Length: 154
Image (cartoon, rainbow, N blue to C red; front, side, top):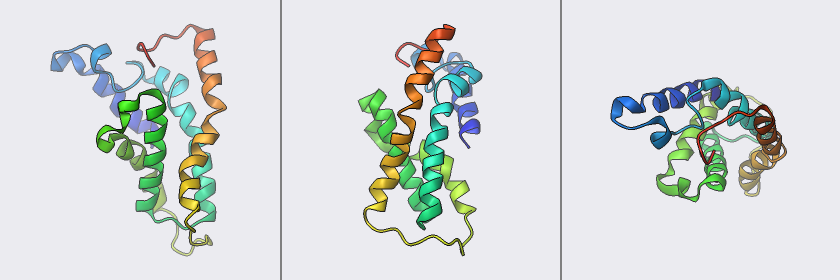
C-alpha cells in the first residue's frame, strides 16, 4: 500500500504548477521523481516498519481500526522527527494508518493471536520506529554517495 500512496503524493507534488505554485513550495513528498521517493527516501524506511508491525500483529489480536490508529501514530511520530508541525491536524495518522488498514482487514478471524494487554499498544507504536532506525542512515549515506538531490530539507 506504500507504493500506491507514493504514486498519489508524487502526482500531487507534480501537479503544483496547475494550482499556481511550484513543486518545491508545495511538495508533500521528497521529490517529483517517484523512483527517488520509493528507493531513496520513504518506502525503503517503511519496509522494516511493516516487518515490525507484521510481527506485532502475528502475536496480538488488534482490530483493523486499532491497527490504523497505532500505525498512524507511529507515522505521525516519524514525521514529527523531521518536522514538529506534522502533529497539526492528525493528517499523518490517516496517511500511515490507511497503508496498513486494508492488509489488517485480511487477517482471518480465527487467527491464533492473543488479545493485547495495555503494554502491547505502546509497543505496537514504538517497535516499528525502532526497526526503522538502522535503515535511515544507510539511505541517507547512499543518497549522498550517489549524489541524488531531493527537495531541500528532505
